[in-house]
Length: 215
Image 1 (cartoon, rainbow, N blue to C red):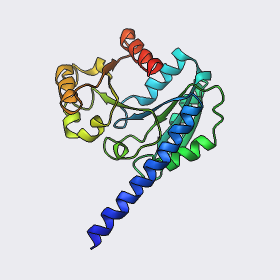
Image 2: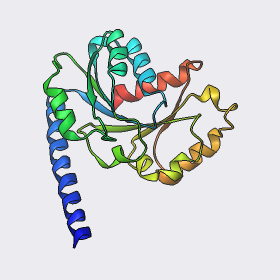
Image 3: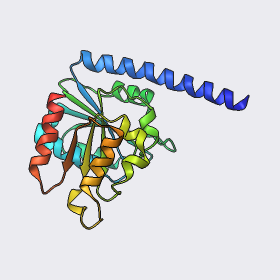
Image 4: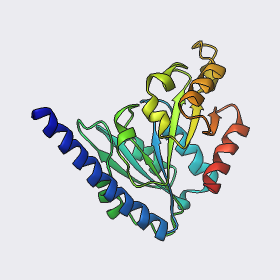
């Protein structure tokens, strides 16, 4: 009986979250704002990628909602680039949900914003199960993590709309196989676009910029 109750409550929570996420997405579409849920393990380079994106596309176009257990460190980094940013601190919660994002949006002036990025809590498990109202899911996999992560954490890569393999300059040092990583991603999500990101390879970054512009 207890197990049955747990399943029922869990389904109700996810259903309620999905409804709220749909309302968020409707609002953002009405405001002509493209939105992206950024997910990955901690330290994969989400904030660095966003900093570079702001530099290239202009801070006046971009807003970022940051999710972390504690501190405003990442939000401060985004603000230093001149972009609008709101920090959500979750305490012990390992993911953002639609209710948290809704409250954050309510505290932000999105006038003139064209792109909203939600930088989710660093975690390859929980965030995959909670819609936050964005158009697309972006998953980062860094060369410091291991090329087998997509098959070890398939749910995250299954819900992804695009994958970026980051810190590729460290691949050789970390014995990270780009070929194997891409093969494992395609096992889980066969048609997904895959980009790479390195501070040393500008062409790869341009592909990411084109993707978000055309999303």
